[in-house]
Length: 578
Image (cartoon, rainbow, N blue to C red; front, side):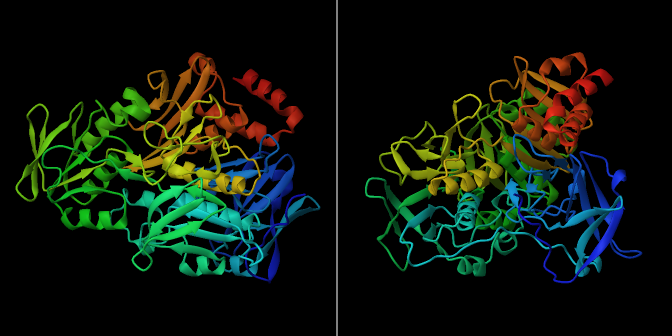
């Protein structure tokens, strides 16, 4: 049975008329105003298979309007959901709780009923008066002394936080000890490359009171020196307690990655930076002033986002990359070429198919010399050339060629089943192919933290999440769903590439393996939902013109409106309409 709706935090509610039930189309959602004249107070009404769900209208991640996303009846026995168009944050319409994605808080849901053909909902009077909707968090427990188990979380990022919360939500009453090298509590790291001025306080995901309330121990500025899977212990040091040892029953390794550095002459000069922490961002900001010449090394997501952020500050920016066009290794040449034109339009110089020979300068960098002899003037350099997994402290466990832990579908090491991994340090078997993959995305890290926590509790839940990532460059919103590193040249593009408003479908045989969109929300999250259900159209349908992005949205709508036995009939009807 579905959990009862969690009404936003106000004991006084009012039954509000939302409209005629027949006016809400099945498989859709609609925002309805609930305040008085001139008020913007609203709720979001969803209807699936004849049932109504009423929720708060904004995503709890960064406040995007959910009405621009995707509302779905849920597939393969799952609960009905709503998904934010920006970052794939997905919420259960019955409970408001997070299903997947980057949000750590849920959304408010309100009880509703139909009387005499009219839909009503119980809305807190504070909401009607203009107050904000409350965020929903699944009930969490605390440490109980009788439970002697110790679960260690090595790393203080999003994956560890998601794991800690999931453990308490799933009833774990033992000790949770998080060891982090940083002086900060977990924060939203992905914002750093988009906003170099962001402070740790602004980016912090949970307060210190939160960790205290739920008995989640956080040991900051801890350097882990050894993980011994045989003795089941972690050795670490802090300034106050050098040579500490933590015995564990299960451990999650979620230490992320260290930025790759360039090993060439001059690499140790001043004003050559990498970006990983708020302190790194602050150092870059000190010299990133208007008119300063900044060189970015790296043509993928971190490098491109840094270039965009520096250009916004008025810097003269040049990007040096081994790829011929931006994002070539993740989006392919055809899509990458559109971003090359965008860089040119925004005044960023692109030096593709290039490598750094050396950095010039005495104590401080003043130039970057390329392999062909060209010298780029530089007041500062930021290297955004990817990361290497932080696993040097792990002993006696299998690692992939990059140094990531090789794990099973349950995200634990088969030869040491009490050791789990999540995020940049996790090399797991793809649910589709069985090939071992490592995905360096925030969304994946969070979900792996949640799944690993459940498996630390013996729930045997395989990790099958469809990868989703996003980026923002010069006001253009990029979304990518799926995984297709070997078929980037087999792409079908729909839309205006020159105008930076298009959808790219990456295909293998007759299957759509991945989809990238630029300024075409919510197509990516709709494709993500169809991929999860195994209901994506075939590549041949794209080629003959019977399917496009709008038809994909209609197919998802039909799936959400239909009962399971009617789904195929609905799809056939749609095909006949085209």
